[in-house]
Length: 460
Image 1: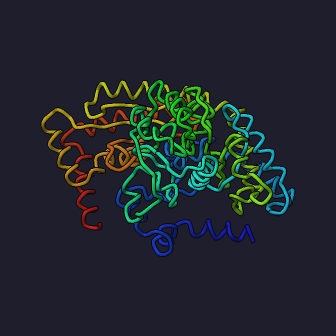
Image 2: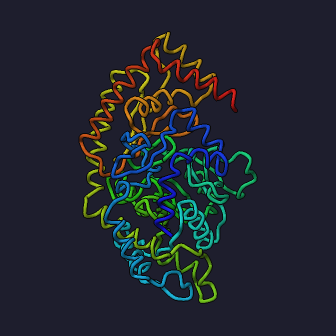
């Protein structure tokens, strides 16, 4: 049966967009077609995707940070095949699996400080939901504080601590008593916590929307304030964890230990959805505090053996192939190279990031002709300009990237952690060419995005 399904997959590849238009999400299909991202990828390996025409594309998006170890890593594939062949007794529910115990043991070994109690989830947003519940139950407080521009997921609980109005719209009212403070602002955080009634402060160690990095001393200050006011510190490392910032966990860059750490995405190896809430035994015990409350929080698929095996194999690869170290090295090369380009091109105003989580900030130019076009584009749509960078990167240079968030004028890259010098050189060369074209007022990029704005307005 499985070979029959694979054969059908191969014969129906060309129908992907038709099927999604009819049965899945026609609006997303239109978006991909309008921006020229409808490449119909049919295979992938490492840092490269292959489209239906056989063209190789350098993947600097990595499934929003899922593919830290690269796509279709053979070691994870073998471990999963071996797990299937072993015919394990997965998800008995009224028993315990050894693979989940082994993965929990490994996560406790590599997590910062005394984080050693693990609850497995199926996704990042589920992990955030669980972490918020743990904080409320452990502290007896229901108030929550998050950061502006925060992205913690799209289910109702995690959406309540999401700082992006484009996702919150049409979903109000959300959880009560959730408030936000600016990222990197200890004064605002202290004011929010000073009443002594906040259960948790949740933050992304490096913010995904815009790639905002903590200033020196910020996370240490957060730790001190949370301790002072009895608030739990929740680090959401669903995207920035597991090697991406040059350390196994992003908080390790600043030597800070949160009370609860949430991970997902890359733990899967790109194969089986999995995530984890890692906390202290003291907090965990306050939630699961009796035999009657052994299911105070639970799910059906969280500890399935395939996900546990994928997680174990992924961590082996991160450690054995020294991918955190490579992320730090390649990330430094990109940051240095892009900052040199910022000196050449006036609209590239800032390059920021940590490891291989990098944001390129664009701003209004000073030269009059470019300024007029900039203002016209932003009058049409606040998100148009960055398409002048991402669209030609793909169309002319076969590099996949993304816009970092609504209204931010930021392009973001999240390459697999195993990229090499050749991949970095390809990206920097391409960015130089794209930026050069974008700074020509008669260049094709301006016309392309203006036409895009007109088409978008017509179809919206």
